[in-house]
Length: 505
Ligand code: ZN
Image 1 (cartoon, helix red, strand yellow):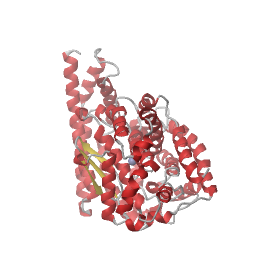
Image 2: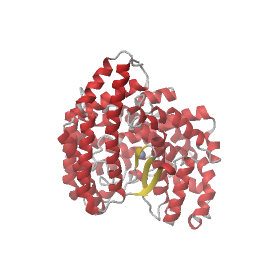
Image 3: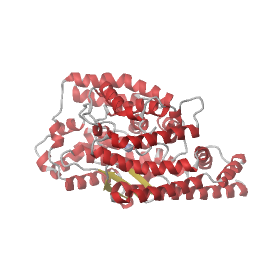
Image 4: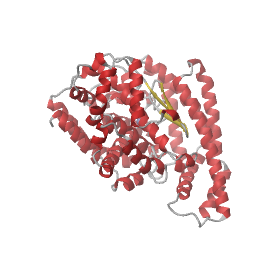
């Protein structure tokens, strides 16, 4: 590589790294806002976050970055398929997106969503949608503005928002995959219902003292590979994972003394995200090649550890004796198979984050069906609760009694994360497809889990997925690792296999 090229590249890397540093400062403040900040700090915090978001945006859109990109794109000595080529491709994409957004819009969005999240917490607590409506209205308008500013070619405005989380995917692509999923999943869930078999659900709502849950969840997250020397777990209203940078990754969960799965599987889920963050190449931090590929790939990691590992019989063959020791009152007399059936109970329910592996995807179809018209302007924010309840009836066969179990349950819309929901079900599909490939490469994973061995799978994921960062776009990464384009079939095969045994279908 010529001296000029390498000099321009290292300048570009330093600009990108500084923007990433500013962004990670915002992540620290965002994490604190969700965990320890007193309510009184809301207004001031929103000013801090808006300032940082504005500075990061300024940095990422500086004319200097544009010049360096142009110079490097014209250079003829950049190896195709190299880390450098991937970085240039991704920085160009981010730069084009960011330069289309006026600074005023970025700051307004940051300030509004920070306040709107506070309003959401209060409205959810009081089951009071009208209290949240003005904020939903503001956020929706701003997101529509974002879509217009970014542009969407021949597509729909929603594409511009989806692209932020799933580069290279459009609403039409998602619709094709979701329609195929719906066609196989809905009859499968119907068969479960027709089987008439029901686990002993009360097993999971017995008394599980919170300190014991905390200790048990942390031990499990550590056993699967989350490094607590470089991360921690705290309590927040809504579970999430935030990777601040090398050596510091934060997880949150929420505890309920009478609901075991919420915190436990929530922790495994967030630990899966955290292990992805911890598996990124620290030497590439601040550049796209050292960043997670996309949200669907991120979600595939959390789903894999939560569901494909954490809800497998082999996993509990290993962990159940310890669960019985930790929760003698709740589980001392309960056989493993009854517990295993209970944690794999398939039953339509209101709360997405507590839904089972199968019906979970129906919650996503519902949100996807609402977000598109909301952004297109075909659905007014005031009509959100009505449409929610209608779709809940259609997909889940049930309607929430109040909005906190319905349209107020998720933080996403208050946080401006529109276009984010589809990545959860895409992540489920990717997880199953990767898991099948890991199984082919590593031999019988079940017998490894039954011995408490998670290192081979963790290592495989680190090499094949984490270390690759954004070197390839998500769909290409999936195809490279698994040898097949992304499909809903591995997910359906996994569910058919598991539910077939449990429900005799
Ligand atoms: Zn997740």
